[in-house]
Image (tube, rainbow, N blue to C red; front, top):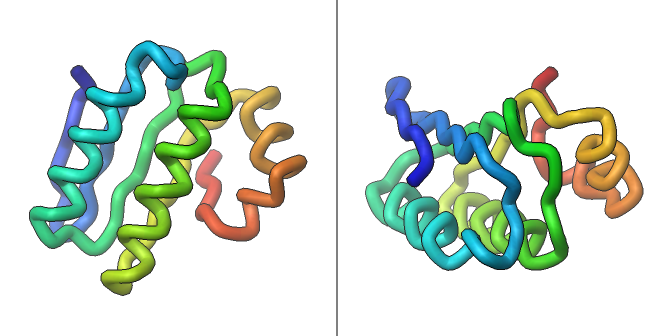
Length: 100
């Protein structure tokens, strides 16, 4: 279970574990519930996350698309150098706000 903190109309989510296939069903459900609550933004704090696999990327892209359809935004905070390089390679840094 992720740590979730509401800050006005934005929600900060800290999974504090790798975002890989084994945890993505629960993580996606958490994020979808947050989107359904009507927030305008989600910040996913990757502090403590060392790896994101293709399934995890799919979850982030899906949530980004859901937020964007409602006029909201997804931001990624504290990505490791490797994860930031992955986002850059996949050109996701052009879609997500990246906060160091």
